[in-house]
Image (cartoon, rainbow, N blue to C red):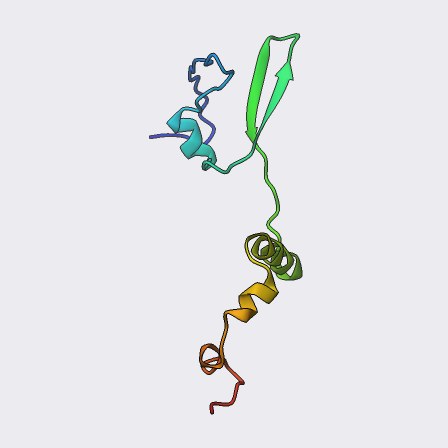
Length: 99
């Protein structure tokens, strides 16, 4: 049975490109995914480095909508998108009168 306060040591090898694989046990314990951000804390005097998860707050509400709009505009300008829309595409929208 595992304890939440359990300490364990895992060994990884540094690649020629300076990359390190995070062992699966650590990824699972911290809930790390490919997009997770991690921080390294160096204690040069002790000769240690510590890895920790960086918690980034999620944007919500208007900030999230603005972020989506910015990503959308990078792929296709709104005017270009609207040129491809005809009335048949808009008939199912809520609040729009059917013809």
